[in-house]
Structure formats: structure tokens, C-alpha cells
Image (tube, rainbow, N blue to C red; front, top):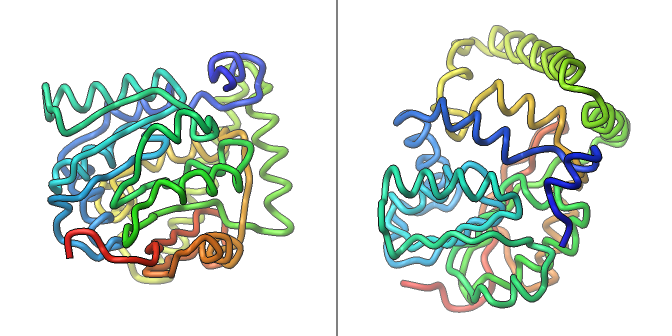
Length: 280
């Protein structure tokens, strides 16, 4: 298993954990509620009580927290020790000493580690597997963690035949630059994203300020999402059809789908493993 700190130092991997540590300073009740809403909406469940939830590549820990608040027993893991520290910080803040929330450090590509986790009613891998460097092996690993009748909620970067190779070069440049250069590149990317968002909001009649509040963005932050996007390496992409066919061939059926509409961003799929649904 590759050491995230070593890979970050040589520019092969973005420092995701450090970015999440900065994001947690902005975490507030609105963002937590937005994360809960996004789980309810995509999973089509009002409560997760009685269900086992696995957060693959837990990052900030926000969605582990949301699942726990919705009643699930939670297992969170990440390969980045700083991300693991973020999750532990959230658990200590909101569920101190909670025996129903387990946190581990591990790599989704580590077959022995993944094989020891067991099977879960809900497996959540949002925006994670495309940063492993081996997207399809990682997706194969997580499908095996879903119990019969259980749900897999996965989000993978959308494939853009012309733009995806360009973004890969930008990400490699970002990770090769010293800190001042990274700040300039991330700032430019954030400005471009803000301008595109403003234009889309004005044309559709939406409140432009709404995208900078927690609700409506899964509780995430425009600023730290922009840094994550421009720096996120490794970087792989797939069409929603490719992801669906891959999991379908492993015994899943589609429950819910939200695509990036051909733009950059993530395609989200919720799929159920065929079999008896847990708790029903």
C-alpha cells in the first residue's frame, strides 16, 4: 500500500487529508443537515436506523456523521492519516465514546484490509474511487462489501473525451508546483468555477448566493471543492454507462441516477445488490 504522505511529497498524489482539515473549520449545522438531506434523497430512505453503513475514503467524515445521525451504525476508513484524524475529530465532537461508529486507516485497494471489513447494508464511495489510481479494481473491491439487498452509492468523475486529458495535465502541474504556484492555479480555477456558476444561476433564475451556502451542495464548500478539483490526483474518469454496466455485471440493479449532464463533475449512482433487502 502506497504511503499518501510520500506520494504527496513527490507530486503523485494530492494532499486530500490536509484539504479536509481546512474544510472542517467551516463545518456548521447547515452543512451537516445538507449532507443528511443528500443521503435521504439519493438512498430514498428517511432513516438509516438498523442499517450498517460503510464510508469508503471517508475524507472529512461529514457523511459518516450524517449516516450516524440518521441512525446507522458506521464504519469509516481512509488511507490518509490526516483524513482519519478528521473523522475522529467529528466523532469526538458529536458522538464521543460511541461504540456504533468505528474508524480505521486502510486502503480500498488492499485486498486483505477490505476482506476483513465484512458486508454492509449501505456502502458509500462518493468521489473516492477515481482517486485511487486503479478505479475499476477499487470499484470491484467495494461491490463485494455490499450485503444481499444492500445499496451501493458511488460517485465517479464524468468522462469528457476532450477536456478530461486537459484536466489531468492541470492536476499534474498543480501537484508539481511550489505552494505559491498552487495557490495561483487553485485561485484561477475557483474564479472560473464561480463565473460559470454565476452565469448558470442568472440564466436559470436561481439565487447565486445559494451555491455558497451548505444546503444544496451536499454540505460541501465551493472553495475547498475547487482546490480538491484542481489538485485531485490520481485522476480517472468514466461515463455513467460504464459504471452502471460494471456493477450490473456484479449483480446490481440501478435504483437512482444523477449525472453531470456531460460537464466535469461526478456521476452519482445508487445500485442495489439483488437479493432480500435488509430490514424489510
